[in-house]
Length: 326
Image 1 (tube, rainbow, N blue to C red):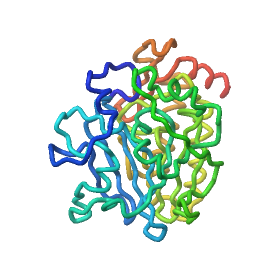
Image 2: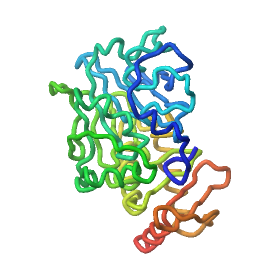
Image 3: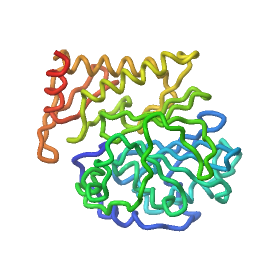
Image 4: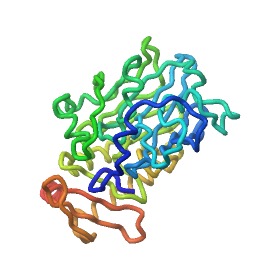
């Protein structure tokens, strides 16, 4: 898994950005499995970017709405015979085992609301399939970061030489309830969680005890901070999320769900252990394993013994965190 940086794309990467109709060809470009009574984990299984992003779909029948967290890599599959390479086609037409071979949103019966955890390409390349007829929400924490003239750079699309999706998100304040097009509450609260990027956000589903954190953290792959990231802000975010979960009446039952690799894991344990790893990095107990140049900066890599957590970031961010925590 490459996760954002420094890899060469196959020549077919650009070709997969265009729409394709549903087809009965090879295996679907996505899989779906049920996490809760209302929510499914959609995984892009073999994308050309080697990201395998996690996408979450929450069905809210009372609002006739499917809430979608992120849209993945746009179905850019390594398999030239892959079927359902458009996320929307997959949701509306692909049979899902956990639904008795019915699709997640059969025939598009429910409308869509899309929330983008942040603007990196592997979370937004499918957004145009929904943006024309569906609300798209993002964080208002740093509106300038999401300005259209900066999106090619901040999404990393420019680095990869791929077309930047065109969409106009509505920016929500911290702790905003997410609602349908008709203003019906969808049962989740949007939280500003800067650190990985300035626009990173989380969704909190209090009723189901599910916390969705995008790329703020995950296990068994490098937690990556781009040039625009901040470990100082990340530490504040982790403390805030930990306090939120700890204050919940059933805190031990809350599950954390990430943008890659990690889903349905104990939230408090993951939050605390990830922070402990980061503190070890800042305080010098973890040593640099590798150095590399990315986007004009020297990046460093740290890997925890056993490989549960690892970090790739500009070395500057580690120095800033050391100064801030002295």
